[in-house]
Image (cartoon, rainbow, N blue to C red; front, side, top):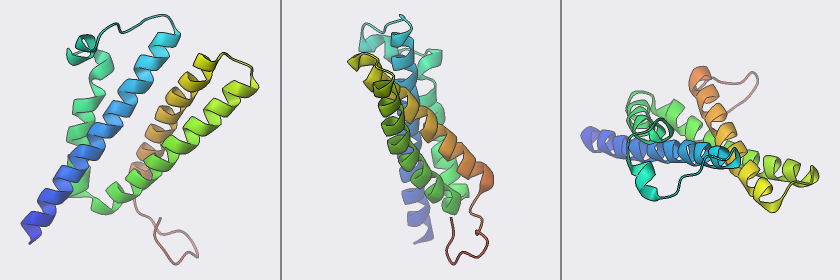
Length: 139
């Protein structure tokens, strides 16, 4: 049963890490497009480039964290998902208030969501599953 649980954690960690790498890649590609450097075909993303290195690194790192520190992995996943939603919403609203074009609004949401998700995940992994003062739960 322990082996099965480790395999499940490994697969879930690899999937979550790969998804975070994809979020990072999407944020980088959108930011580059806003700066005038475009990706014209998906074949460009299939090759090994610095923009796409987040997916394999995220996959390996996610699997490693899920197996070695499952409590931190769960909290980092929660924080990254919340950061993605909050960052996308706040950055898109800020772009709308600044009066940018519709493309600027959604690209700000994508780039901001990716950035906040990564910061939230890294922060949680650096802090670890510490118990808050006076709190009855972890997190």
